[in-house]
Length: 136
Image (tube, rainbow, N blue to C red):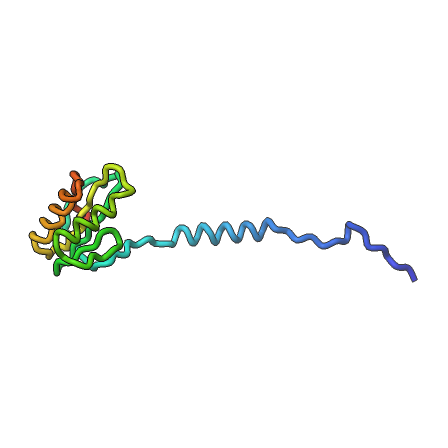
């Protein structure tokens, strides 16, 4: 009886090319189907208008219908000018020449928006923009 010697020709190979192809297809599928939604601290409905987007460093102020404020993703404890001004001063520490974007609910009172504008001016921020929904 003859025994065959195992040689390097009989070694099993694992072909990684199909595995890499499948992983790339899965990655492309996930990238194409992922949606990025803006999660806010306050639920607001923006008024409708047409405008071009700003590309500068921004600080976002969210104004709810009932007069509550959020700076970025931080809910402000008080609804007064002093609390909002202090929050804006803290938010602009790392930003050179910031632009404030006010996201005010369409049903928010005009006074709440004016308070946000006054707080931006008191914090030393000169440029204020308003966010709106585009007409669909």
